[in-house]
Image (cartoon, rainbow, N blue to C red):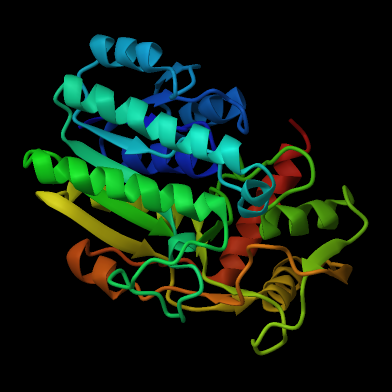
Length: 332
């Protein structure tokens, strides 16, 4: 299949492109490079030994998106483009609503106009809000903790409504948990600008000496050690979940959790990184961030059953791969 990947130069997008190409598919990437780099595109080519088409455009630009569709014959779309920082969305809600909703509407309009009927959507475990873990796909959604989660719920509803009116339109909604790690080559990984919003690149940057210590936001949660608990999944396992969702696509809307089904606290992840690398990570406890919840991990039985997909890589491997990329990325 020929697959359009929006946000394909980003962290999850670049790894997904590799997984698609390794599965025998061709890829076209559109990305505005707001929180990514064209270096990722060059790295994808280097890892796969294949050329890919890249267009630097904003997915919210309806006319530009339509021109891409006119020049290509797509079998499906994987829509990953969007703003994604939970804490940032609390500070800048209008920017998140505008960006995430408009980009999704833009790409959906093009799909309808050009009769592209396979659509994989990048959603998030944040849609579950303060439900009790493990999260299951049938739970009532409670994304009131942050605007980012609200944008994902809104997009899920839009997709569901479109599928109701167009029986040919097939959708897989993937609710991600917490991707970490990097491709085993060390050529692509998570490289945010400024102080990272996500935990693992913060840890690797402290290990490299970019920051003096790790800020841990809150230690009074009802978890084993008081720090927040998350379901950390290797980014390549997550990428392979996208391939499974595209290849196993059936009529209607299908929702899948992509995680490991296990919770790991912040301090447990720090200890795993120290074990994997031999590097001690200094940290300080800071005030709990608005919008964060205590525990978030997945029930992944539906994806295992219907997609024949499950996460295979362990926590130590995730840490080693993340550190390998950080070391390589410093040399770029």
